[in-house]
Image (cartoon, rainbow, N blue to C red; front, side, top):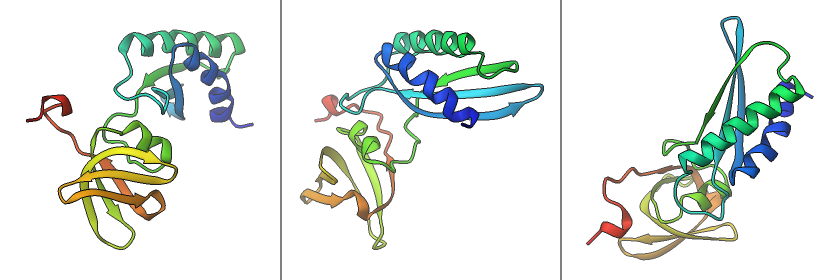
Length: 157
């Protein structure tokens, strides 16, 4: 088992205890140490952003789990982060987490759609587009991104 998978195996339960889900693990050299970046997020059923207290709790629990297992066995720097709004939307779970957000989608047929993602039903994105509801299969999305808005949805006119 490679180091990233072993870290993920140890970090996932620690993240869950803090109410978060493991989103990914990256291991890279950092001078004489190893940089371990663990990305956590809210469960896909949740809407909003991960609370800083939950991220801090997850960080302590993940660090303790790695230290107890002596993984990695060399000195390391642990970084815990959340995906951020610039993460590409590539998987169903990413779209679930983006509900209520405005998204920009480049479709495999070359067209583009920018609209508010209201729901994900099976493998179909339900969008509130300017011309009304639009439904797009996730498989038809070549690239998706969250559009950063300065006004929250509940503040719109």
